[in-house]
Image (cartoon, rainbow, N blue to C red):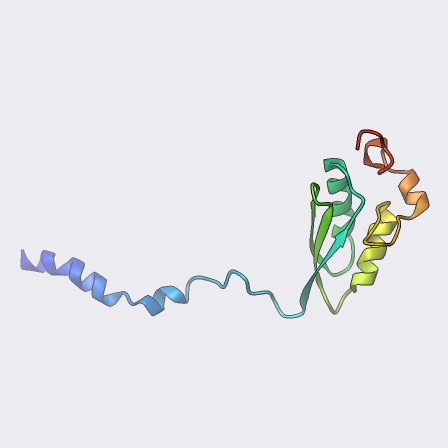
Length: 123
């Protein structure tokens, strides 16, 4: 009977805090060579979000692209040895959207759906 009472005590003593610390990954650790950049865009709707995120996914070195529609900010995480912020800004322009102070490519902008155009009266 005493043996069964000692079992929980032994289990508690055998587990150390350092053993648990090794199993939890660092939440904010970024792999080496990764960088993040943000662009202010002219995107106005969820269709813009889908279009931009999909377009950037095909760019070399891009790991993720996320557009926050209310703030119009596109956050891109990329491999710094594969691409640059300027190349990513150009990719945004070629998709038909402004990227920071640079205006969208006119031809790409003309091909956007009406709801995605910044001159649309709805927006």
